Image (cartoon, rainbow, N blue to C red; front, side, top):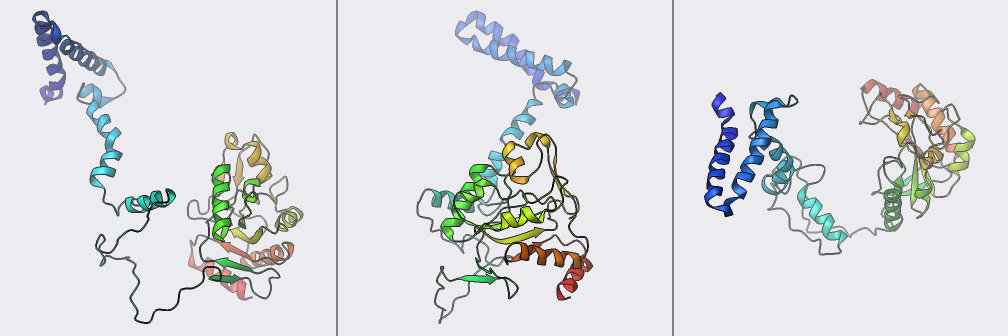
Length: 328
């Protein structure tokens, strides 16, 4: 076993000796002892270094592991992975997006390329009397009941919450421009309503997390006056309260101080040089009934715009408490 471990190193020494002998008689073979000498030197370094046991036990040969790891993603992507595998998007989905971005034909065949009997396969059943296609301009859903003075006709297709701070300014601009072009809404995420959300005029869903970014006091509490001033902007169509999210339920979040730029500080209303913290829970309410009262207060302060909430369900009884509070 020990001989096998050092076989590659021994082979390099043997090639070096033979290469030197051959180069003395055939000068054009000068590269053989040079390459073998470099590998022998690498083996010596592997033997004396104390950091990696694999290199120490398998000099020269141990480097194959790192070479394999380096090309592993490419090998999986191009040789092993199927067109329908991988996450968050498969190769087929990426190819479709690339084609559409280049304004190429994006029509793709389907059905026989996939297992139509697999669990979760979606399909549309044929009808001999299909319904007429809905007009995209009118295929919308009214959000907000009698209590809303400014209900919103929302699209069924919208941009989910992604904050400025986790996304760049150009990314926010691009998303909001897409929302404006498509006639749907763009959720700000809990990072606040930034200047970049405003530039292209796409409809906005302003998300309020536990940090109340954009409408907070110096101590991090909810500021009704700042909220009312911001929510009066006609671009903001709805308000969303974030109770928790699947990525960090019950823990809150943090943006380290070194990532809090001047723009992020101004957008969120937080000081520079300090960690930007989203607490685990809201300070404006603590019970389901108080949350309903807070929602009603936000609706009033925003001039009657729809107010909703999103949450990550941990305990069923917690959600039942919210349902009872809504009924009350």
